[in-house]
Amino acid sequence: MVKLLVSFALAAMLCGMAMGQVDTAKYAVFDAKGKRVSLAEVATAIDSSDVVFLGEFHDDSVAHALQFEIFKAAVERHNGRRPVVLSLEMFERDVQVVLDEYLKGLISEDHFMRSSRPWGNYKTDYRPLVELAKEKKLPVVAANAPRRYVNMVSRGGRGSLASLSKEAKRWLAPLPYAEASEAYSKKFKALMGKSAEAMMGLDSILSSQSLWDATMAYWVSEALEDHKNALVVHLNGGFHTEQRLGTVEHLMKYRKKSKPLVVTMRYEKEFQTFDAAKHTDAGDFVILTDAAQPRSQR
Image (cartoon, rainbow, N blue to C red; front, side):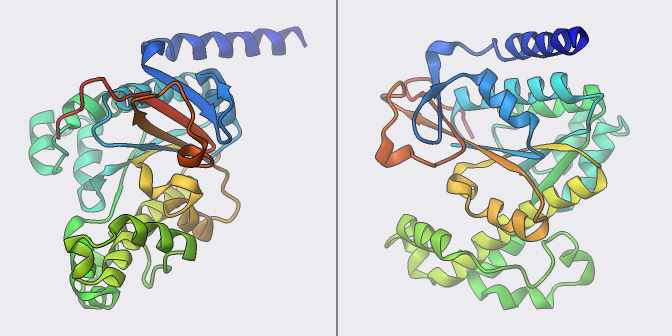
C-alpha cells in the first residue's frame, strides 16, 4: 500500500512538472459540460484511455505548446509500462517510410524535410513532439490520406478510388470506407454552407472528408493492433473529432473495444468563460486558449 501511494505521488509530481511549462494565464481547461478542471485531470483521464485525440486550430500557438506538454506527460507517465505512440494528421501515409528512416537515424533531418512534405508550421509546432518521440525511440504514425487522393474523391466521388493501384490503396483506409454519420454530415454541410467548394458538389466533398477521417482512424487502429496495450496520442484539426464524430466514429468501426478520449482546443477572446452554446460536448475536455496570442504561421 505504501509503495502504491508513493508511486501515485510520483506520477502526480511528474505530471505537474511536465505540464507546468505553458503559462496558465493563456488557457483554461473545462470538462464537457463546462466545469473548470486542471490539466492534471486530463492526464488522469488519459490513463484509462487507449487513444487521446488532441483537436486543434492549426494556427493556435498555445494549443501546440499544450499538445507538446500533454504528449511529454503521457511519455513520462506511461513509457516503460505501456507503449506510447505519436500519430499525426500532419503527415500523409505515403511518407511513413521516410518518417521511419528519420526516426531510426538513417537519414538527416534535411532529407527528411525535403521528402516528407511537412506543413509550413512543422518546425515551430510539431517538430518538438517528433523529436521527443525520436529521442525516446517511440513510433510515429503518418496517419493522413495522401492529399492527391482526397482531391480525387472531391472531384470524382468515392468511386474514383477504384482505379488506383493496389499499392496506392494500401495508403488509405480499406475500401469501401464508411459513409459519414448523419450527425457529422449535418455539421459538415452547415460549415460548408454556400462556399465555392460546396457549389462543386457537396456530397463528393463530404466523401473526401470521410476518406480523410477514415484513413486517420484506420492507421490509429493499426497502431493499437501493432503495439499491445498502447496509448496513441493523435493530433488533428478539431473538426475531425469534435463531439466524438468523424475520425472517432470511424475508429469505433475498426476497433469497437477502443477507449478514445477527445480533447478539443479552441482559441477565444473570452477564453476564461465557457460558452455552453458553443462548447458543450465539443470534447471530453475542452481547452480554451487566449485568442490574443500570436498565431502560428503556416
